[in-house]
Image (cartoon, rainbow, N blue to C red):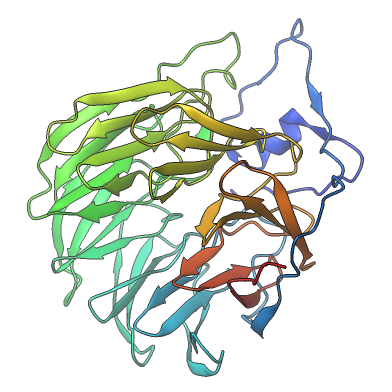
Length: 395
């Protein structure tokens, strides 16, 4: 079931905002004696604009994602950027020029992002399929059925394509044949965010989060669970209060794994044994970005935070865009960048979080996380417009 995101210009009810992210099981989120909170998106703040960010090129990718909360981010691989629309159209463009290299249509609804590695493009569908294409030509190599919808990005590594399904299972398939290599099953809570944590792979390991507030590491070769840790415990009076999904993709940096939950915590773990390095309260369903010693993250109220990745301490917090439904923030040169529900792109100074520039991209808003590669950043709007930016020159 997909729920439309409603862009309200005056006020946004917390229920409406979270309804666009939740799978409803028919239960009531608020009892008769609970007062519904109403949040109003912050107006665009006045800023001292330090530069005008200009695009290098812009291309159309089908019809985009429409009114659904579909974080269909593009992926960069071997000099190309590959992007898809929700109807199954996939296009590859030259990173520098925007020239179209190939176009393919998998004829299946796509909800999760695209993955690329080892000469392959992988994606999952709402028809419970994992689909793999040749990265150079866009020609389909194989597709295989899994247990339910795939609404997050798969991962490709060491001869395996690994994907998460919405019913809590983790599938690994041979990257050349599609034959199943192993399966891990996890029970899903009654009420969860409509989204599943994407998968991080590295050093022979698979790391992912679950709707019960846990993060786990598996051996990529066999699927053996090495460790599992609880990032947060459910608490609160209502069903909504007790939703603690790990919806953001865990991040592997060196010997550390970083994970965050909705209605819970952000934590750092030792990659090898899962020992807790630090943990603190923070609620988010957006992905994290790591640049140097800084973790940048958008919390569930669209406050942008910079944390010291060694300790979890707050370096700065930007609160002027509260409830504007920001995407994840990405690190781009001396800046952090995020898009919002009205189609604005916000640029933050990495040192103090000051908003230093803003672009209006329209397109019905920005849901997909921006993607950075070297001195270029790529942003895709709801209506399928893919735009490339170069690092701006300061005045």
